Amino acid sequence: MNPVGTAHDDDRTGRPPDAACLAPTALLDSDHPDVVAFARHHAVGANDRERAVALYLAVRDGFRYDPYRIDLTPEGMRASTVLAAGHGWCVPKAALLAAAARAAGIPARVGYADVRNHLSTERLRRTMGTDVFVWHGYVDLWLDGAWRKATPAFNVELCERFGLLPLEFDGVHDSLYHPYDRAGQRHMEYVRQRGSFDDMPLARIVADFEATYPRWALLAGGARFEDDVARE
Image (cartoon, rainbow, N blue to C red; front, side):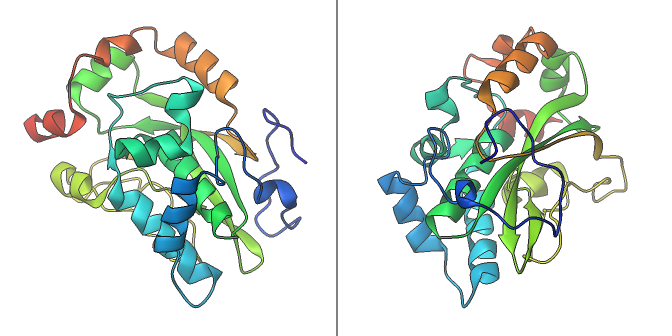
């Protein structure tokens, strides 16, 4: 078993998943009744690939992306919390997809990378003090003998408002952020791969957020990311 805090090598077709990639954890609570019900309802298809794609779309579009409402406590980052809240940001939304996949019998890991975001809101840039987002979350899904990356962060309505290309996932190719938006402007740039984990390394994420974004708490106070996007 890969312990929390130790990343797997980025093996695309290498070592098959072990039992840890199907087991519930405190944060990827795939045994939570609501997660089980969500997976049972949405994981439809003739095979794991089709079921994984259906789950991806359900998480991507069923839960609004909102980086203004971040709760870095274990309760706030738990997969089942996203279900209850109806929104999330990339890390807990990835946790939900991984947990739902495990509940559906599809091996899953959570993966992370640092990305340079060339298109964010003025409020977010000012508060973060940088255009680098550390510990951006995605999911590794074991499909047809290989790990496939799936990024369920931005719901399709947000993409339309922001002029972004929605991230699609077909269960065959990796779903990664586009380098450019619809107008050809720079969007996302991957600057560091942190690897994939059997469980969310929350302590490391919190420590790096506190060190990198000391003004993050200023985003609180009822602001909505969607509203800021509309004003850009």
